[in-house]
Image 1 (cartoon, rainbow, N blue to C red):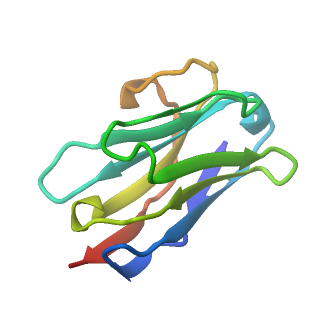
Image 2: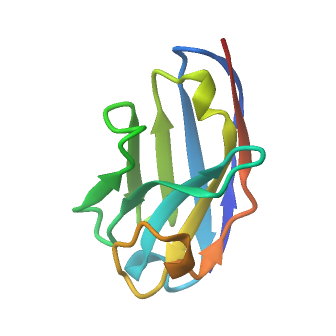
Length: 123
């Protein structure tokens, strides 16, 4: 699976962004898809994941109620909708695929990664 995330940018606090992640490869539709982020000087952290059918979603406490993950298997795309953005959401956002379909928050369980897209939230 090859992944490409885009849609990042500069937004004011309280604003919104939508991050698509386009995938190629046969295993996308059977993979758990996750979003992670990494701020300067910090570890890459879990943001959200969605099961392969899209029936189950999980979120980090810091984004619950503000971010929404979704997927369209017909388009081989997973999305992350970011609402009510805060300056502390500033980071590079990565999409990732777990071909085993586990629902893990750990970055070590993900086999494929996109290149990341920068989200900057100004106060």
